[in-house]
Amino acid sequence: MDRQSRRLHVDGHVAAIELQLGWASSALPSRLQADSVLDGRGLNVHDWKLEIVRNAYWKQLQAQYDKNHLFPWRLPKVAATEEQVVAAERAVGFVFPQDYRDFLLHANGWVGFHLGTDLFGTPDFVSGRAREPLRRAELANYLGDIGLDPHEYIPIGTNKDYFEDFILLSPSARHLPGGVIWFSYDEVDRFNSYFEFFSSMINYNAGIAMDMKADSDPSKRER
Image (cartoon, rainbow, N blue to C red; front, top):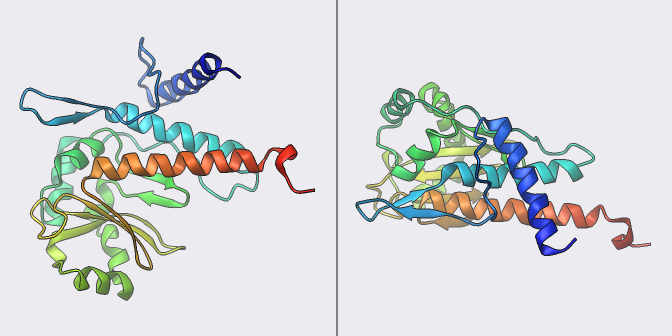
């Protein structure tokens, strides 16, 4: 498949995902790269619809080659309302970073966002479910060891079976304000913003999808 044909192929899948999300538009995104623009104040305004569709595309490709159904394939949940986001912030005890607020206003949680790890939605913050990963001593001890107080962070995603967590830091945290820490028994990576985290996870999902596709090719299997 040449470059132009592949581009049309990708755009076709993206269009199908947009339709499922109710985001069909007359102009299809012809790239699968992170995208942002500057608003009148010089602040980044991220194209969350495009970013969400990008991740859904790679998750869909994973599902296509996941013959044993090891990982869930779900579209993100319906967007939160402003009132739901405010209620979640009150439950957590701090105002979310702007990029994370904007994300929730497009997708209020995502089951199987990265392999078997889910992203929480506003009901998880209000109910207290988002704090459940903090009961694990290794995570709570790690956050204390790096100098964070409990009011400075909240888990925003978890995989309870594999002890993987995504931790959002408050905009006023002493370390990595507004950033995200990826933890799985120990620190895996850290990101300066939620958008940086989300874009990086899309790249991880893309790599996993391409590996699964390659592994499914009979010509590349060991004889």
